[in-house]
Length: 152
Image 1 (cartoon, rainbow, N blue to C red):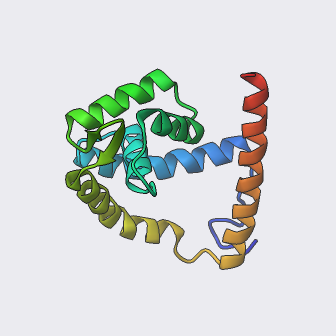
Image 2 (cartoon, rainbow, N blue to C red):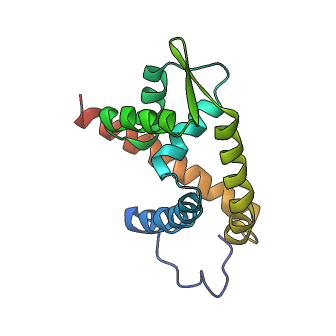
């Protein structure tokens, strides 16, 4: 890993350091989301609908968001209801699809967070990002395996 003044005494990566990084970055996103009147879970759920290759059923979206956030399915269903009430999603038969307003909201959030993200991630060498990506992918895989065991 390349060291700089701020990383020369950095702690070894562990669950606490990962959590602190997650919540620091999430705090930035949640600040922007609040400006648009939506929550983190609403944004994740809306993004799942917007980025889907085809319209998704509510059950499809619940499964995808549960896999991502490890959230309670009942809470995710409530989030779907909130997105429908805000007219960011619309029912189309058995499927839910994002509205133009929903797509525009995600685009606006992306435009607002892009310069923040560039400042946070900018200047980190590619090899450090690649190493961090490998470690985080392995931690995610192992944690998902442990969670599956605990909830089986």
